Length: 211
Ligand code: GAR
Image (cartoon, rainbow, N blue to C red):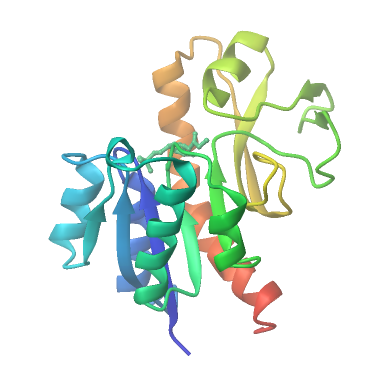
């Protein structure tokens, strides 16, 4: 069965491109049926266009409230019979109403290490040191400012609690002495591009019980 993916983006779209490439190279038995964004004129949409994938921008400013926005977004994905929604650099928090339309079928890629036990506020790094968890929008900056030696990226199920859903896949990335936010984020993204297709495969194994 070919999995129907809906991808949400807000910016560069390098993770979207990684999924496009994985589908093209038959590393993923999937089809991206719709790319949706909250911003127009972003590189991610150009990538969708170039790959011949239908795309749509929904501008939050044109909606009365968040619920209304999320309902319309969900409706677009449902119209395209999306089975799994992938947040690939989507910088908005989705409401419970949206999540209810895709039970256990929304995943996110986050640019830091998240714990297997969502309740935990600390994580053990590969060098044995302990780090706090960096959730939310500025995870790369926060890790750099904290002076920890490792950070990474995580693919996880999206729940109502931000960046606290069950983990599907993660990869640690070392922080180098002269790292800037830009250099660190760019090395994290390199790993994300492998991890996101892997996370989608993990979701298929876990949720659709396919080996
Ligand atoms: C990625 O690093 C992703 O992990 C991050 O935004 C970047 C998007 O890059 N997402 C978040 O910070 C979500 N909290 P891309 O547009 O090049 O894929």
